[in-house]
Length: 582
Image (cartoon, rainbow, N blue to C red; front, side, top):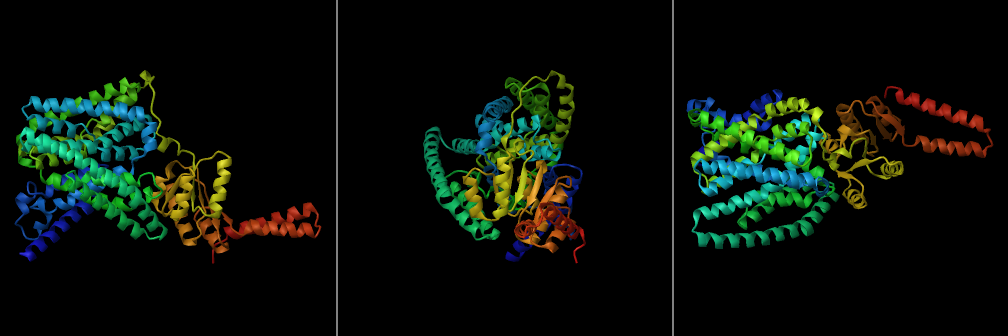
């Protein structure tokens, strides 16, 4: 029996790797979201797709996962890590600066969309609790798809990009309360009114105590622990503590009767706005992506294609009604908050579809007895179709937005975490030389972001108000979070020659147009950096020239001869840097 189970796990892992390594990259080449790639892969490889035909065929059976329940425990952790990253990206400064659009426009959109969608589901015959859960799930948009589309088009800092970000931030904040409400609805749907009220009160009390305890542990235990791990210089240790926090906090909230996702979100929030935020986000991203892929595959596997084709008319009508209703609500809300016609139209269509958290709500509501299998199947397909339509809706929004540009007289929000990073300098390595350059830039009023592997340095300068990123400055993901795409210049002051060369190489690949200034330890190192395209200053050159100048002054050499001699030496050193390294 154990042998059969072991073989099944191996076949399931192989099937997932085929999807992740072949099907999803194919969708990526077509510029279609990876989320949709995993959904389609799940539909194809599940029991309702190829499983009907290939399940018993030798060798080809590995293309099928006939029992999605086997991989659901791992798939759930995909949602857990997604919530952790959402918490990690939670910027209180960003929320405050965008508060009018996040808490105003975003709140109006979530509440209005939930009411309209819930009312429609209730009118069509669903129970009251099911209608509430469905409305809440359908009110959210796809953060994963929308942010990917905006990033690929380099439109995150544009007007529509900032408005979309504001709404998505509010939706992300609403996820945890929505999951909490759905959990309470599950209690009410399985118990009598009196018992449900008592259970509700006890759950709220447990929730408050659990959240308070987790926040205290995060503040007084987790943060110091991560700082100690960072001082050791071991990325593996930081990663291990982070994973322990994510899983430990998630299990803690589940034990208190709340969702796993809430604990993960709180773990991320505890580490947000620390100097370790970006490094942790970069390190955990592959785990999140693969586990989230498993989650979307299990969602796809649960879609019965026979059911879809049998109710295709109703499904298409529901998906179209959802998109039209959410687009109308978003457009009206945007205009209400003074946003111009063009960005309002674009944002309305961009965020009109449902999102990945709709699947989370559907699964939670089904498990809690709120949805029956028929309603869950119907809503899953509707959410999937609206997500598949998101790229086309985004293109339509841009096209329509251009037609309304001459009507624009509205305001647009400014995103502090993005707009203020334009024209800054990225400093790789924040030791003695990096700090001196930073002081000079500060005197000239030039903004900068510093990246360093020293946890103590990052903590110290973050407390003094400087923008610091903890991590390896040679990693492209970390440079991206330091605003590399909008940086005015890069300065490389890293001590280790190999690390400095890796950083220059990474910068040249990402920003071949940007100037790169680098410090070199010796002539060989300087030649290697110059060959990579950096403007190089050997560490000892200017100090040696200044010493030579003092010596010549002491020997009473005439000033014009002194300047000529030093300039000649500089010229010779520059020629040496241009020479091929031996």
